[in-house]
Length: 519
Image (cartoon, rainbow, N blue to C red; front, side, top):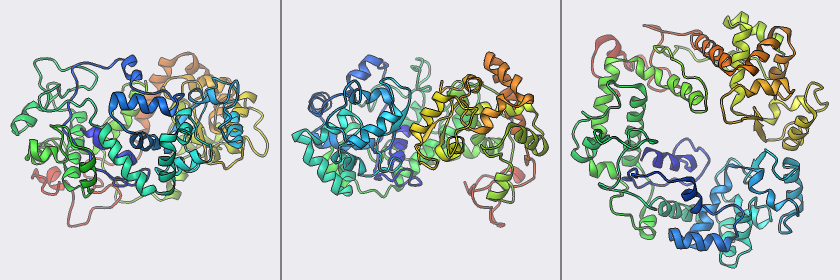
């Protein structure tokens, strides 16, 4: 349910305007299935990007009861996101799709010079990071990326819908919400169907009915556990559920239009928690109060644990994170922050000297921490100086050619992966990139040029476990720089604002052992 709510947030305006999409209520109450869908089953329900509009409409009408307006509206989700060459290069090679705009095709060929080239581009070239109706403008200009996109403007049953969305963003948003609500009710399990898993990837054992006491009895969460003791990951889950309760109870989105168009499946509700367990918000608040009262470090440490999990989930090393830090009484200015961060144009010599002087990090620490660039992306301006006006002589020629395809000029607003070999996996391939002269930043590639770091790069390139070991040591060191503990600093109510003098948030918990009345 929390995941269902967060998918709305990714396109909505209610949560920090993440991409500008419509705000809409999400009916809750769904449960996990008792079987896992195989890859073949999943693909059978997803039309490939090479499908024509007619085939997509038939498949989604037969299997999912979605009409043409739903299909065109859901396709509008391609207004954000990226696509890899392999998903659209059938329109470029061996023969170019005659429907495709010539200039658009030329640009795509520069990004994907061969059929199975490992690169990507934005799905909406006009406003790639904004959820709006420009995707439909792309289609009208013959600049749709997939066959399944462009054919929506060719097929008679969808062409007029595309036009209407292109000229009326509010209409697109309205129909998108209706279609998303419909799609969110496909094959849903509610009531006593299925289960609520303790681990999303594993069926519950018969001895543990996770959260059952909360949903069925509305009692205090005596069975809310995973293992013998409360974990910080569990606390984070409780906070997410609490946020879901608060957001659903305070949602100011009009749902009448959706209700008329999309009858809800029995068991789903716009106010699921209010009906199934009216005391849930109170129960979770009380449990969190007890947890933080007993161990205040959990509150301050959750963000650090999440940061650690980012590495672990992408294949990185598991390591213990020391907790107990507090917020400072001053805010670092942009100038102060940048003064402690070497820019990507820095040489390895300058970085090693700066971090040794300011942070007491040695060359091995610096090379290990730089390995964090094995995941993530970088925008053209951060490495454009290596391409223009003159190409960096230390850069591999094929790599440079590829980068120029992504960044045809120095300040192009585009991006690429920092590690071209395994961009989404935390491993040691970043160091192999450096040995192949395919480091993205000057600060990366120079690690393989500078005498004090070159051999360290080689050792990590041939021994991933050595890299992991040194990365953990360096992260632990870095995580203790300028740390406030004990009675130093404060624990803020709002991370971006100092606590008012009259309200020392959580101070009563730390100092007096009182209940968190301001939680």
